Amino acid sequence: MEKITVCCVLKSGGEYLPRHVYNLRDMCEDFLPPHEFVCLTDLEQMHCPTIPLFHNWQGWWSKIELFKLKPPVLFFDLDTVLLKDCSSIVEAAKGKDFVILRDVYRGWSNPHAMQSSMMYWEKPLNFLFDSFLATPDYCEGGDQTFLEKMFYDKLHMATFWQDITDGIVSYKANISVHGVRPEDKIVIFHGKPRPWEQKQIAYPT
Image 1 (tube, rainbow, N blue to C red):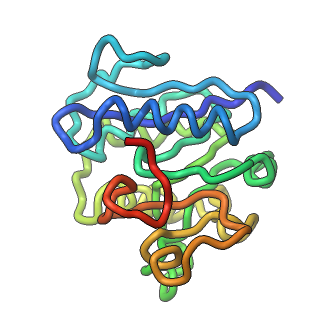
Image 2: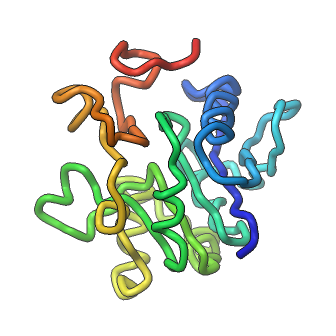
Image 3: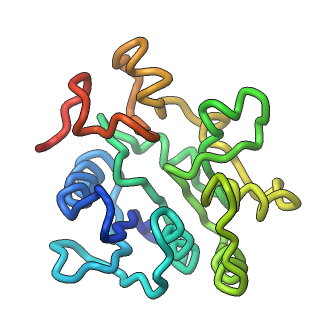
């Protein structure tokens, strides 16, 4: 299998900055198997490999451009924190068409509710990009609702991280309540606080 591309998205004008990309890059270098790291961005002169964002889709909608990339691809939101070796998590995803998080809260009532902070795919997903490009669907609920719509009749392609591996936890639902456990490897910060707004987990300044 070819080396995976590990990627993130930085759209200018928001609260995320190049330093958050570099922090994620360094964590990936420390805790993931050999890979190629790249950032999709509309900024220039970044100190890491980049792919330009071609469409002025605001906020999280720029993530739709990810689905142009040639797999295998592993994506993290910029507020993700890797704590230790994550090789077993990557291994668990290999051979799967598309892997995504089950939503931390909505997943209790809907096991197919998607949370897009961390995704992996080995099958080309250009149909997602092509569909949004043809008719931008700025639906309530953001890109996660868009993905749920697009996979509604393709659930055979989708696998949820929680069903294939341990070690991926939510800061709000897990860490803030129980603290960090030895088995925790990846912390998903969805919403507030951001990693740099809390003290339980070290985050570079």
